Every structure is written in C-alpha cells, then in structure tokens.
Length: 452
Image (cartoon, rainbow, N blue to C red; front, side):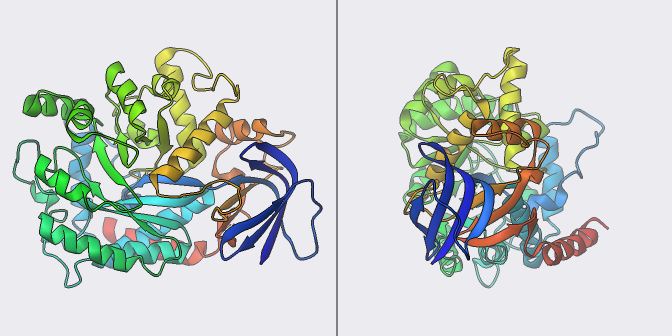
C-alpha cells in the first residue's frame, strides 16, 4: 500500500482540502478528505487526474519543426504529407522506439498519463513485412514500458490510396495490409502489449479514403476495449473527394452507412455541418480534437461550441507531436473558437463559468471513454494516474480551486507540472521524467543521424 497526500485535489464533486489517497496494485483503494499527512506519505500541493491523449503518431516527434518553410507553391496538409512520407522512409524499428519514447516522456511531463497510439508504420522501407509482423507494435510497447505511460495501441488498417480504390502512393507502402494479414497483425499487437500492466487494444481504420466500405466493416469487428478510431473530415479536399465518390460528406457517410455509437472516435471531424455536428453528438461517439496540429497544418476549426452545447463527447490529442502539451492543446481549442466567433470564454459551461475547468473536465471524461478506461479521475477503483501542479509557478501562485485550471491552461504550460504518478509510481519529479537524460540522449542521436 502506498499513500499520497495533497494540500488540495480535484475530486469528481469538486476541489477538496487535505486529500489522502491509498493506492494498492496501481489503483486508488481509498480516499480521505480533510485529512492530515502521515509519516511516510508521498506529498504534493495540487492534485488533478492525468489526462488521456486520444491521438498520437509517436514517430512524428522526430520531424517536429522540419516542415516550417515554404516550398515553390502553396503549402497545405497534402504538401506536408509528402515531406512526412520522405521522413518515415528512413526510420528503422530502433528509430521508432527512440523517438516514440521521447514523445511519451514529454507527454508525461505535461500531464498526459495515457496515450492512444494511432499506429500505421507497420513494414520496412520497401513495404515488406518484418519477420515478426508486429515488430513495430512491439517497439511502441517498449517505448511505453520505458516511460511508464499508459498505452492504448491502435493498429491502423490502410489498403488504398484514395476514395474509390485508388492505387496507393509509393510513400504509403509501409502502411498497407489486406484484411487477413491485418487480423494477424492485430493478434501480434495484442501479444506485444500483454506485459504492460493496463494496456488496451483498439483498432483504427485509417480513413474513408484509405479503406473500402467492405473492409471497414471487417476491421470494425476486430475492435477491442480501445474502440474504433478513424480520421474524418480533416481537410476540405477530403470532404470534396468524399462527395465526388459517394455523394455524401465523410461524417455524413459514417452516420448514415455505419451507424456510429459510443465505440467510435472520430479524429478531427473539422469540417462538419450543423446537422452533422448535432447528429454526431447524439451518437455518443468521441470527437478527437488535436488543435495544435490542426493549426499547424492549416486544417480549420472544429465547431466546438455547438458540439459541446449538444452534449457531445470530446477528447484532445497531440497527433503530429509538433508540440506536446495538454494545457496548450486546450488553450488552442478555446482560442480557435474566440478567433472565429470574436468572443471570449466561448466554451465555458453555463453551470461552471471557469473555461479551464470546463475544458479539463470534458477532455478528462472524453479521453477516458476514447482510450478504454472504465473508471477515471481521483476515485476509488481508478488507476492512480495523478498530476501534481507547482503552486509557486507564476501562473498558479495565489490561485485556488478552478482558478488553478484557468491559470494552468491559459497562463501556463507543461512547466506548471511538478510531479506525475502513473499507477501510483512516480514517473515525473520536479518537472522531469525519471529517465529524461537517457531517453533524450537516444532521441538526439537518432534525430542527428536522420537529418544529417
């Protein structure tokens, strides 16, 4: 049994003073409030639950900042994608493990305690399967084990280059599978994560442009507790191409043809009509929003106000990992709404005027649903995934209760995070991951070689 004591902590019914958590086998076994610290207790000042990161491509952390120059024409998602394909062509399994470990350590340092790894880099540089089909999945699992982050592994099914059965592009050769080989890959992915204490397996048909309707139904049947994750309506070109193929927009097609429910997670869903927004919210599916990546790629702005007003579930992700920081993801989500609506505190809930508290609560609940966590928050029975904030950080000093979340999200960043416990084990202390030096050295050596 481990005991942790905090001066104040965010519980499901609000902030409480003197919170003492008893942790057994990585799970919160008991909670006292108004309690005094006892000898031997681990201690912190401000405790909040760790957040789930719904959507990550870990290897892309290695190319962060390398695409911020303009080519000969207009730059957009599609030109960025070609640069990304050239980068991933160089990656070995060892490279993927080193880069992903760096990304996961940074996630923990920022306050993410579980990640959904949308994993599509399956084969070697020539597109040939490795001798162990799940080699890359095993490398993702190794990065999670090394850092201690909770992992929801999402093997990606990718079979075509565009709507209507278009041939894959050369840059996509490392992603491709047929249904039979993908079923074997799912089995090996499950084996790869079996040793992790609370890892979960989901499935990710990449997008409507990358799978046929028939394959979508086949792959969906393989979903585990991690759910069904799919890119949808990220760019206007995708919407236009889907209309040309089917006569329907991507989210409209999924609503009409698939029958979305709470097992589904639609990543981005940026370009949705008011009717699609309302219908998506009613399904119980989670909208996976990645505001920093969506801004970096020039994708657009999701209609979050209308979606949350319709009681839609949402979560945040880091996607391309160009910058890893949950506070800044939530800030960007709100700021996108402010810029398009020319108003302030757009997403604050009517019954909770703190914008930071509204955003944090929505991301906490949606992230847990999206990543297959049956219980979340600082409650008995939940994994002891706890983030302690630094009360002396300039963004937090003198604040209390929901003002702490407002300060962290709108005036701070990952430097507000002092300590992180995963399943009750300390993984971040004084703002640094326990193995930051070793992980950072391996990452630096890998990236220097890749960009030379």
